[in-house]
Image 1 (spheres, rainbow, N blue to C red):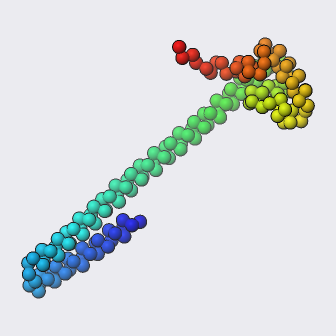
Image 2 (cartoon, helix red, strand yellow):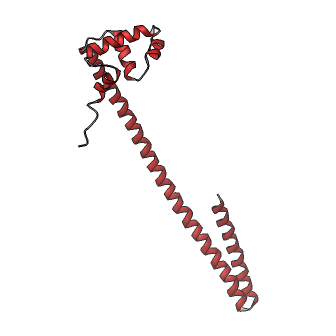
Image 3 (cartoon, rainbow, N blue to C red):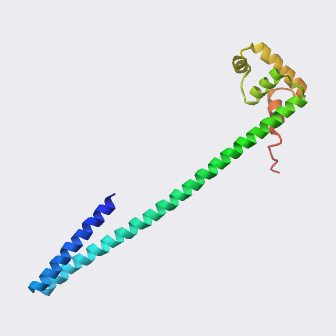
Length: 166
C-alpha cells in the first residue's frame, strides 16, 4: 500500500517541479537553476516509473503464486480423493479376507479395531462389552487367520505394502 502512495507523491513532485521549470524558463531564471529543477523532475519521474514497474512485477508474481497455490490445492484434493478411494478398496479387501477366514460379524468388528491399534480395553469400551470377551474374540481371530498374535495379524495385512530394498 505504501508504494502507490509514494508513486503518487513522486508524480505530484514531478508535475509541480515541471510547472516550476516552465515558469522559470518564461521568467528568464538562470540556466543552472532550470537544470537543477529539471534534474528533480527527471529523478522523480524515474523513481515513479521504477515503482510502477516493480508494482506490476510483484502483481504478476502474486498472480503466478496464486495460480500455483490453486493448482497445488487441487492436487491435494485429488490426492485426498485418491486416498479415500484407496482406503475404501483396501477396507473391502480386508473384509473379503475376513469372510475367507469365516470371521463372525463381532469378530470382524474386533479385528478392524485391532488393525486400527486399539487396546483390548479400548475395544471393550467401544463395543460395550467386557475385556475378557474381546480377548476371547481376538484369540478366535488369530486362530482362524493362522497367526500367533496381534502383531502378526496386523503384519499379515501390511506385508504386501512393504517393498524389500535389497
